[in-house]
Amino acid sequence: DAKTTQPTSMDCAEGRAANLPCNHSTISGNEYVYWYRQIHSQGPQYIIHGLKNNETNEMASLIITEDRKSSTLILPHATLRDTAVYYCIVRGGSEKLVFGKGTKLTVNP
Amino acid sequence: DTGVSQNPRHKITKRGQNVTFRCDPISEHNRLYWYRQTLGQGPEFLTYFQNEAQLEKSRLLSDRFSAERPKGSFSTLEIQRTEQGDSAMYLCASSGRDRVHEQFFGPGTRLTVL
Image 1 (cartoon, each protein chain N blue to C red):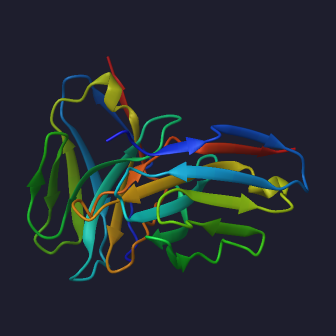
Image 2: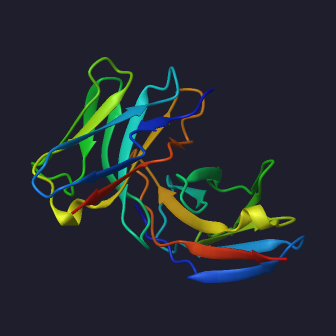
């Protein structure tokens, strides 16, 4: 599975959009991009995934560049409860998720 | 959907003792995963079951670790002769046929080896 690179930490003001970037320049054609988050002392939580097209669900939007070498997770109106570590993961044929260290997002009041 | 449950939530043991953790996946989920997470790191994959068959094991899973899913429902993870380096959060996740891209994680079992 391709490796991902994320900033270590980010800050966002409550009510504003949080844009979390991820680089995955070695991604293969059959590999999906996944985003999970982990709130302190809880298990990770699935957010969204995509292959080529942009995706949106009730939690977030995922923007994948045309060359698929990077993506951005967008939380449109961040709240204090969105403070968490966000993991960008690339997965192909394997069942396992390979987590990096993620981005620690802090939403400030 | 009652979620993935794990027991116990916390376990303190002395070095050299054996410990066993249990995971109850979401009912009808055929896939079950174990991960381990140490402080400041993301979760690391340990092993994966499809129904009762253990299909993938990480090199992290030494001979002291064994996992079972005897009837394709709950799973157990046993660590024999625990070492201080085994101290970590052990996470279980499950996924089903209808939402194959999502792994649903439990709250984890925190192991402390003294």
